Length: 402
Image: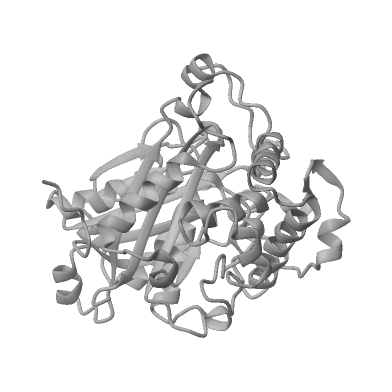
């Protein structure tokens, strides 16, 4: 019976480009920016990399449908490069390929890269997908704000939360993330906001206002992984290891008339989280997980995700948020780097950007935003699609002896 990958893979090095409107860089240059930092951190030469995975969600970045552009940009040593796409979880999907290759013994050292160049497309938000397998099978997706506004309405209805209470909790999410992002030189948006600004901002899709929504940006992030034994042989002492990595996909259950889903949560996140906790040996996530980076495409998404990750009791996340549980100085800090709210969301890069922050925090290298209480286990959560059809990814990392 499969026993999982806990502590079978270590992170040798990581890098992250500055996110934002990077008109000065193309996709290849953004990858190189992240790659150079990761290689310096890893202390290896590119000739030592055995295989690589590239996460990209949109072909509009002109990367085409293969991994060749990354092989060119990074001058990789004629190794296999696999391009993967899994909606907004594409970055974590690339990590899964690299991690599984090392865990299986197929590669000694593997590279995972995520990149997206969205500002050049001319769209204010995400590019519009043309007809193809997804839209033919599932139907028109609608707008992101519209879909996630329905999540907020369903959450209110199911749990009997007052409109003003939910709005204030959502506003707290955004204010908290902006305060954290202010300390991060790689974030796209670095400005403090207050509760009144959020509550009085233009409405995008009731109850989501302007500050409840994340923007899009350009960016890249990179991880180099290997076995703990090889990492130590290369001189690494403080090792961050993968404790769990799980991905769950919708299968249509949420859209069935008699399915039982009430629209107030993410079914796939709950499944991926439960599997990840089992793999990592976590029995009480509220007490054992000490840091999270989650997919806050909208403030309501972060709120609901706290329950889907079993960090808050069902129907109680809004109270925990207002009580400061997920603030930088709270019990389980969330988005200590500013999250999607401040980085924006270059689709393929976001999952690895989350891991990058957790990696720095575990090693005590996060500078001004370093957690006051050193984290022991850090979780990243990637979500792609919409509430009724999505993919969820959960990665848990920690120090080798944790």
